[in-house]
Image (cartoon, rainbow, N blue to C red):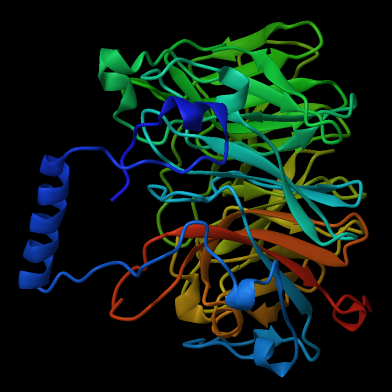
Length: 473
């Protein structure tokens, strides 16, 4: 098994192979563990080549046709529709996966802008991990790395480097893409030898690939897993995760143009925020949601960058594990567990639009809105298990409340590629609403898996939604 230590060569090259820990003792231990696992019937994970490859050495795979309109194990809830015409789906592997991650995974939301899709993946290794930002060009059908955090940070061997980009990717009015990082293990800060001091805000230029640190450790001993950009006002908003697991999430508003903290507070968002781009105000839950049942509904707190002060509680309550962009009518849509809300940023009122689940899974972390504000797109089962429902990709009509499965990706993708998409934290919708891009956590073999299938590697799909499935009436 590969270990968590990088050689100097791996530090120099973002695609160098990840070495195993040398020494006969480790080889003996590995063999002994294998014997024990076999003796107790624990089984082994499937063998995966690094980097993962497609059949016949192809660079990508295309799946289309009726096979995408039925899924293994899919028992749809009453009233859920299935698209009449299947999309065209193109699949790619991320080529940074030249060694085994712990696991290779996606945790941050993507961005579709300027005719391209930007996404982030990481190896989840700790204390010395790595995470990449990629760009997909649909015209050329090429998925290319832009940068990686080890390359930007240039830290010595033995020093903490983050294995996850857990924030959203956001493009500023300056044309740069911004993001923040997170550790690969919650224990990394507990050992002083890891030199953990906190996480940072970065940016990368989408054309040149130039990348740099925007704010190095703005909150000491804090990771920055929850983050989004107000690209017009150039403010990076973040909710932190305490490196030592001693504090609740802190709130950070960082003024990028001024290069300073605009405001910080001891009460911050856990996993998502609402940005009202028309007003510049930010909304989030002021603590861990305690809602029971099918939603995580809780009161919202408002932060106004024009008057930096402690966030103010407002009357509206929503569930908030994921939030959309603001619609032309000034509506933002949020989702948590099995419920969708509409939040009006003009009068700060909210209402439930009903359930989000189409089958057995409901945990959703990425929510994309069509440019006209009519349709939401999402994938239930973000943290795994989506394949149990056939990995459905869902379209929700914000006017009628109807849910429609645009396609089922399991088993169609597995049959074509050997890869099983089992959940996603990152997606992007093209600016014309015709193409949904999704970055997947996935597996390579479900044989013998009776419970939750573990993540192994990351892949990407381009889902071209037929115009007939996007018609409004």
